[in-house]
Image (cartoon, rainbow, N blue to C red; front, side, top):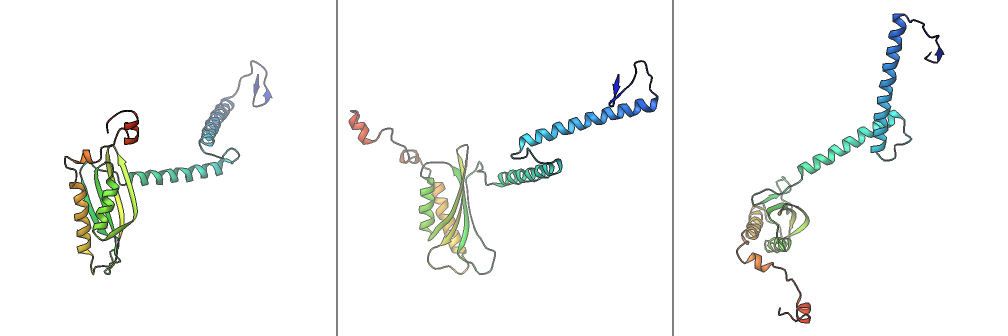
Amino acid sequence: METDGTLVPIGTTFSPATKSCRSHSEAERRRRQRINGHLATLRSLLPATARMDKATLLGEVVRHVRELRGQADDVATAAVPGERDEVGVEKESAAETWDGRMRAWVCCADRPGLMAELSRAVGSAKARAVRAEMTTVGGRTRSVLELEMVGGIATDGEDVRSGVQAALREVLLADGPDLADRFKRQRLSARFGNAAGFDS
């Protein structure tokens, strides 16, 4: 019989202290095996960690988990479209002197040509988009626009803000019965329809 690298004759009895030490050693060996197994799993989950020591690997895991948590927070706070239609406009800076920049958002049902309509509405209010973000989920869309005024800047911007909001609200209200016909896509172009003998 062999224990801890030394041969022990069969039939030898061990004192309680020796048995306790042996069971402790076995428990410690199993614990190290579990830790090493989990470290191997972590190495397989992260790129370029095959040659890292344990402390460096754990540091890299902590960094990666924090990065993933930040990405998850960003996704959770992203502007996800809601179920109801809404329009909002606010000045970007809270300073007393307005710099002519504002932030507008529109949440509505997605439809073809919506961005072109929003662009025309913003232009009609003497503004232009300098940045746009769109999120579309399940047929609903939320567009967030960073706008700046074209030409002169009003003193407080309140009349401009209300003008942009009214123009964007018109886009929401433009979903009358002819909207579906206006954006209906042709199945065949006139060129292909006539070539195939169909009337367009």
